Length: 609
Image 1 (cartoon, rainbow, N blue to C red):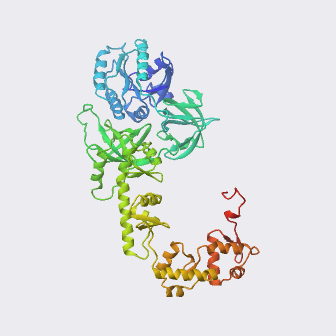
Image 2 (cartoon, one colour):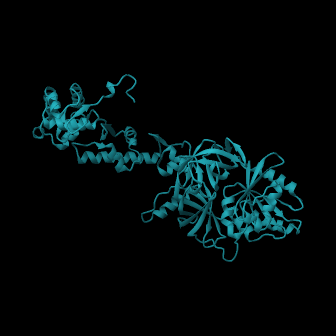
Image 3 (cartoon, rainbow, N blue to C red):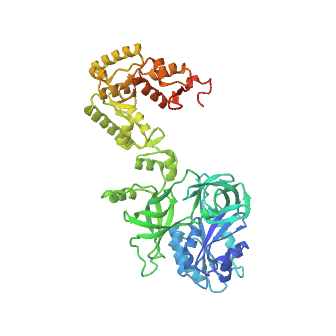
């Protein structure tokens, strides 16, 4: 299927033309038929002589309903531009053309209608001249009369040529369906309609409603009133949705593939001013500060902060799911006939806090192409994960970057991180020679790393650093303990081997030259186990204690545990609390505990449960 929108001034015969082409009534509301004027979007379709099915979105031509017109034109790839022979080029003809040009639509057919009421050549020549200067360029043009049927066969052939010239849709694209209608059908529930421009939707799919980020399931699908299991772009589609009420949806919301889109309220964009001649004496190319952004069927008020001559930062009044390369238009609130094309360069830009940040950002934004490229994005941002590239619209494997722990990292950023890490290790070794290692987590925080898991590969890539027990050191090995500490640990080990749960007092440790810093270093190296501040045992004392306690009648008391361990209350109480924290024992009341099974106690094959 192909989808085409109408365009043109009010009362130039757009709806009449569609009735003649399709045999269907595009005006859905009684008021539209009574006033003989399109107010809202209408939808009709037909089969062309060549066998293709084409659907039409009929848009209103009156200036009061321009937002509805923009919602109809925004999601479609081609237009049927109507100009009446007895009316010629008029105000809304010009405004619709400016909107089409701002959306960047390149495909269409010019139809001079009501050619039985006036000589069509002047209207045709004037319309061709205006349209040729827009994004449509030199499109096919012809004269018709829906009343007499003159030229209608030729028009169908021209539409057939138009649809064959349209680029093929991307069926693998992530779904983003802009809602143009939402309603309820008795017995079925909530239904939304829209133009599916890319991707596929199947019955049973789970999708998300944005900006609410609400998950919904597709209960049923129709395309032009025909039930289907899968809708493939480009097509008009109606989705019967579960898990959402009609009141929660509105025109301009988007139905998207879950996890593949992220809403944003701030974007850096390129502004493309129309090459069309000025529309009048009040037309200006000056800066725009406020406007309404239109994309798909969405209409959102925006504030615009210029960055460069043709770039800006826009702040949206409500979030939209946008990606790099999206094309939208901004309608100037101060001059409503003024339209500016907007190309999204960065949907998630950095905040501008410091003086000069806007100027620096402007220089970066000026280099952006507005085309999603994974390599460019990684090099520009420094580090990204594959899911983040997808959200930007730049999915794919970047070239010439470093891959580590599920991240793509720019070589320049990797070199910078490596230098920072080395500097941190040097500073730590100079500041605390007895405790020189930098903890992984501390290093990651101080460097602003996006993921602490990047520390080990950074260390491994450095000839100056090594990692031991979760800390980073200068040189290839963890520095040896001073000889007096090594001798003290040997003495403590001998004593604890004879009485495993008789922890030395802090005063004795101090006499041996072991203060708080030294004790922390010794325990971090795994030479002693600190069960509580100042109370240390052999490294495997916790497992040994649990094994002894498991032989007691269950449950047991602190006194029973103290006797079984041959210890004192000074050591037994903090040791039991340590075992509780590590799920080796569990306190069941104020007095009693029980031991808990470990993985080694489980039957074979069940230790993972």
